[in-house]
Image (cartoon, rainbow, N blue to C red; front, side):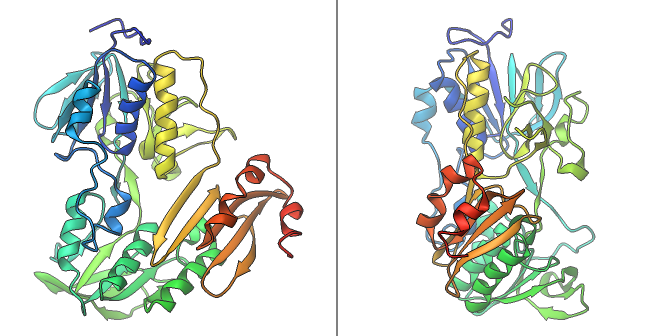
Length: 407
């Protein structure tokens, strides 16, 4: 093992645990930044790193099978060693060793944690066929096999995954019931007013949207045949998808000494603004990482674009570069039916929302916080959303954007 100093000409061994998007981007950015030492990418799944957003859309609908992000040749060319099919089970920071599920271990000079998320489960439910969660490629393929036209699907949770799956199932010819304990789909992310507009979209497409209720029990023997909702209603269902959020994969760090956020604060690995954890040789990126943000808070950001930005910042810090990653206006999107729901900035359910365009299907909303434009959310209106990037970055007064919009 080297002395742990990483530099453009250094020989430090960097191990990245987690072969999803964030892990792959970190390995790529290390090479791009000039790191010449060993780079090892460890993953629990046997697949090459793949793209997860299509799993709830094209893959589950049977329109696409290959979601691989990079071919095998790429890793050979970049001298990135792959250790796939066995995830991390423990970390010993004293010996700088990661124990893997297959009984082997891997040592490191610097470790990057990119283990991502696992779907949240509802405790106490029976183990029945036809009940699904969605995180992996196998999950998506298993759900695809259950999407028989004419069947009824119950989707529990109207977050992004739940809404995308509801749309995919309707497109596949299923009847869909979408239940959500909050007052509207996506209410915790986009607020109840804009969430209601998303709910309207699903209702127009024939989804039975039921808010203010959740799942209490599943019915069936061997295979699910229905469910009891928290409002006492019993519904028939040939399949059920649980989409009630995810939890960061940090159990393997329990005895490592690496500081973690409390579960009540969203969990995850606590880092500074460059991704470094409480152990100076350990870093974290992507969905699992609770980064220090400009407002002084530490929080996880579960967006596709965020993974690449954090990976670049970590790679530059690891090689000792003075270059800084320019702060980006957060961006995320969700494809539902023939429309794309897009968000710039960080919308909050506590913001004041101004709906400036609404034709009954497509809409555009500005989010006001402390008198300034904090975020923009649009559905089917990509141009009007994206042109607001600079105004969000500048924190322009909300009046400056409402007046041209005629609000």
